[in-house]
Image (cartoon, rainbow, N blue to C red; front, side):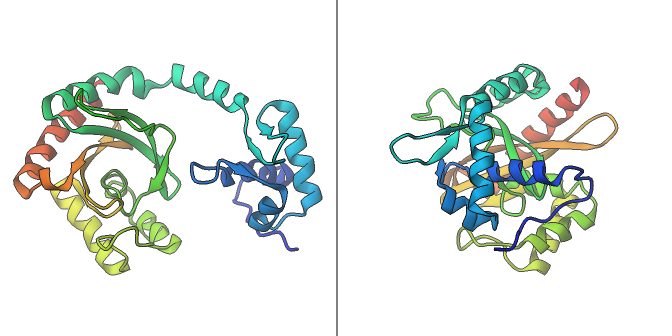
Length: 256
């Protein structure tokens, strides 16, 4: 079986890179994986995967279910994430602005940062009347069909838009933009108006308005958005929310 893993520039220890990349196959849809399953996904030999998983298990990075022999992420990951959270400038600086915004609008506020050609959610502030608040921190989503991702992309070099397109524009809903030229025009429009809209492109029935966040050097560091049921997000409301978000983005820029 041939190795399907590509090595980006800068990788010095290929065996370590291959081992760490196996962790990417564990996600919310597949919290547990078996040796054969990981071999099929990665193209690596079962014996190699077994040795890697055993080493990870010894380090606490991976746990093995004694009944099913399936592997899942270990508590060492949770310990390391706690260290990251405690030193997270986004929690310390941006969180108060997010809570103020959700109190003002009654909608959910999300914060995300670039993660390759995707975004990774860093924080969320939910309205007090929310029945349930889903765990979002650490969730990865595409750039091309989220207001957060499109807002970030509009502030990046156009070559990044081409990278996103090259990765594929998969349809999540009937509203997802999947045509490359239409997507390029969408990013150009966002550059002009200063905010992005997720028109039920990632999740049916949900609309989002997002604006980019930058530091004093005008480098894009992420984006914040307001999100809620599509029926509450008419054109007028979207424009009003975009202005509120832009105000907060300016205040955050002055604090970072």
